[in-house]
Amino acid sequence: MIRRTLIAGAGALLVAGCSRGDDASRIQVGFATDAGGLGDHSFSDSANAGLQEAVRRFGLRAVVLQSRSAADYQPDLITFANHHFNLIVAGGFDQADDLTEIAARYPDERFAIIDAVVDAPNITSMTFKSEEGSFLAGALAAMQSKTKTIGFLGGMDVPLIRIFEVGYAAGAREVDPSVRVLVKYVGDFNDVASGSELAAIMFNQGADIVYAAAGKSGLGAIQEVRSRPGDFVIGVDSDQDAIAPGKILTSVLKRVDRSVFLLCEKTVNHQPLPRVFAVGLADGGVGLTDFTYTRHLIAPATFAELARVKAAVIDGRIHVPKTRAELADFVRVPL
Image (tube, rainbow, N blue to C red; front, top):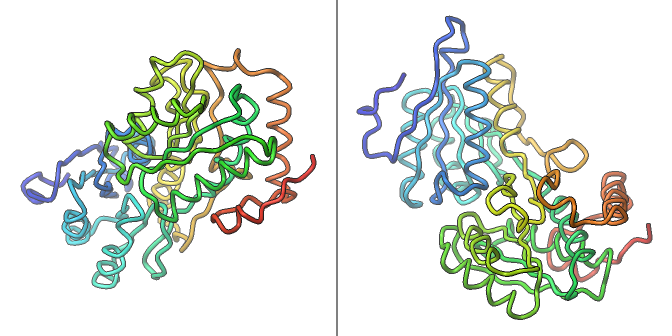
């Protein structure tokens, strides 16, 4: 196992692994988080869950470096490359430029990046059709809203997060064009206080459901909704429902954990990794939770309509928009 002294200064270090006396115990996988780090109950935690499941299943060795800021991205990735890890995972779209440079400098090392497409022969780009899961969330929110006003809280106003916003708004429009969608952006994925403040503004403006796609900032929306009877939050990426049971209507799952696990499995089995690894509703890569704490609040007819919407997306009758320009042209499909 890598000694802590070898990577001192590169960031907070977490090491997991066990020896099972087989080839897998010699496989090393490194995960460099984005600046938000672990503990977001969302994106980074989901990726780490997939990595730790691979540790349990295969006995490989895993190292997680938690970047404190964007300045840590290159040193963290270089640390893994210098020690010839079998797979090096960059934990977010904002690492794309740094990874592009480093992958070119280390052509014999194997990299992967989450939520970005980087065109290089030694990089696997893990992408998710987040617009599809968000579409279901928007449809559900529109059907459940009593005020006919729902909200979206984003982390940073960048194309990746706009996909969540656009899918959510389109899903609401599909089932009820009269529903108003409020939109706020924190400008940061790690500002819990601002997340709470902006969620409060939307609740005060009449939204009774707010979808938070904002990393740790989204935890502020969850804090805010706890004291608001009749209001709900929709979580994102991981299953956040248990953070505030009964107050999180559902979470839009982006199976980062599953994708990371599958790449680890391929690495252990010495299988070639794809250049692009894209998943959506059809293959279970995105979706909603099982409504453990809120099923009693949702009518059977609503679930039936949600199932029809999901089927229409999977079979191509509904093409979910990904940009605001596509949203402007989106026309609901009679089901």
